Length: 343
Image (cartoon, rainbow, N blue to C red; front, side, top):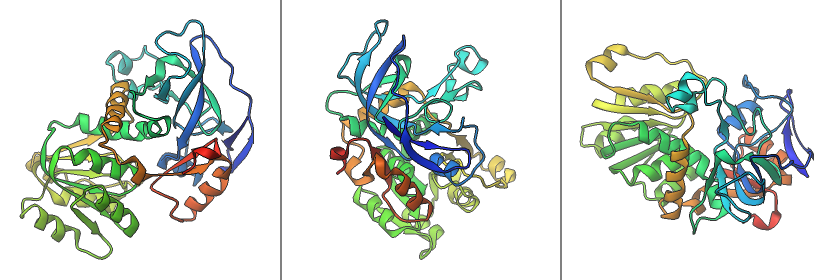
């Protein structure tokens, strides 16, 4: 079996890998596809990382169960599943508080453990989430980034909004927009890439703003009739966007920061305190977020076809390099091990 391996020097190779071994408590998964995450690109570009190099990477994957260990219950050969890629210890303070996404001992498939840029993988069955009938294995690949978005929304104190402004029209931004469209009267998406803004419009976003060509504040003030936004979501991860979030939020509003980014950003705490703003971080997801994500896919809330672009896994090295150089390869790029799955 071949897979994509990243080395400590951040070079990627499509090379032979050991076939996964079926151990107790595990299943063998035939991988339908694995998405390229922004964090994969950060590491590829040289960001500091705790990954165990060389590593068969990729953590946004789903597929069909090919084999099941004798002690596994609740799953069977042929089941379509997605995977919570973060494994946790279950004994630390965070795990005891059921906030395992903050477990200091966590390990991730595709970082410290072999990941999904391959044909098959062995996965601990405790981290499987079964897809509902009607959701394909390829659609289930999107469940991981969507679960992150849903986790962020589930942290908010409100569930309905008048005006939501989303910065960034990449995969996370457009997934956030898809969810926001079910919870808000008005949604705006801000980006600098025309094709991504066109996709935002295609999925139903009424106001899209190219911040290179338009004044974002003016556009948002018009949409909100001068009230500003009651929720701003950062899916870009740069200081300029964070500053705009604070400028465009209404008193008592909420700010959701999903993008990690590397910028160190100053915060005006006088504004935060006097206007009673609430800011939320968003670290990965819970299993329940995956379940909600899969239901959203089943219900057609997520415009999968407009967001996903697939390439064969053997093209992976070239795809990563093109993205690194700034070429537009798609919004959510998924690599598939079987060429016939590429559409």
